[in-house]
Length: 351
Length: 281
Image 1 (cartoon, each protein chain N blue to C red):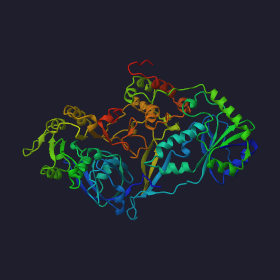
Image 2: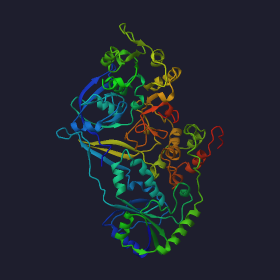
Image 3: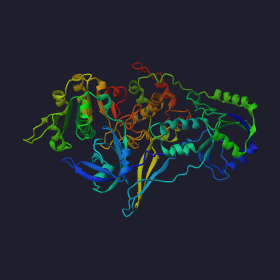
Image 4: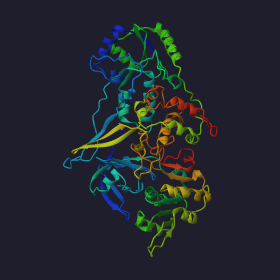
């Protein structure tokens, strides 16, 4: 890893040079919110933002995508056979992504790329992706990343980590992908001597995070006891199962598969799905193993804070970005639920 | 890169109505590209995703046995969009299968042991696969006594009736066929619910005897205490679960019970394993 300096006057020209080699994504203001979107040639990412409304997971995992195509026309030799389609796996880079959101991509990777099965679309898009993260000088009140396994300047995941130092950026270039990108942008000014300033900034940012969770006891809880805890009814009471939390969450990866047909042409699609929907688990017979909202709310929190913890032994399935806390229409707060879960003792319930 | 979502094209070679209510049909598929058979090497207890273009996919237990070569067989209950479309398809039609998926009954662990197979209703498909596999001359000597308790609502609702009769006639398998009730005066097998017949006919549980249970929730609920009474330990009771699925490979996230995915970590679990996870199935 090395540290380089990028003068802000060289930022725009450097980004401009990347358009030929990468499809670029970055935060752009859409109405009242920022979101990650493809950048048009010459368009600059708007780095004057704190957190985007939706997570950037769609850069590697689109909300809807075609899996296969087929024809139902029986005069065609390969009718009714699903066929793979060409997809764009040319290099892409996301500029100004937050460190927690990069961490989330690594976290979700455990689902889509494992020894037994590899999701070809996820794997190839992630391989094609270079991440240029921007550390958070001023985290939100809802950020709890430092106790969720990451932090405002977490440099463990991104290919390049930027720190905004006022008139210039300092950049930690961590990987070969990162080196290739800064090389193409023409950013090369060595700043090894300033690494300490970047660390100081990181410490300052971390100290601004006042929101913390405790997760240390989750792994030792008995799953079935936690599942039967009395507090789930309370937690779920105000939930309207709208699914907002799941769509904006950077670590929610569930999807649905649907066939779409127009005339004789058809395709198989996959779309983000939500465990907040009763349809998610409804059996053909009408039986539903998660028949009510309490069961569904419990599933979401148990998945992130217990099942994930137990299955992978690698911390919680949450990076503390705080989006669900900010945007839940009925103010359900994962930090509070985590507290209830972490301190739960069977038979001694008192919320 | 191997695409685990891409179905293998197959042709419907034969479709047979199994039950008097005409809701269960057995489909025998042959591979459009014969070399694909190599990719679909399965063990008894696994399942596949049946893919109907324009409709979708459904996870169905494999009813044929790995010892039956050249084709693969599934028995499908007509219940929703895909299964209804499948029931309306004709012999010769092209569709797809994906798999084999999930784990299987623990044959490696059960080698040399006695096996009691307990099935109810249309959940007999992977049990048929198991029985055919076990009775294959190459496999029969590897296992001890084999008992089968299989029940349905009425004689006309039993699956694979010709084969049941053939197995009845053999002396290397103990068949205990039963129906909930019948007005057929010629019915020569048992009458009674599966748990009752299990209590009467199944051997006592011990370290060398395993029970494989597959059936509707109500049957499972009442069979479990019977097996406990007979002395079966929870790690000797093997069960196969179902949940709504899409991907079948542990990625789409909907079939989990606790931290286990029914599609990838199951569908086969011991009762001992199930005791540690929420009963969301």
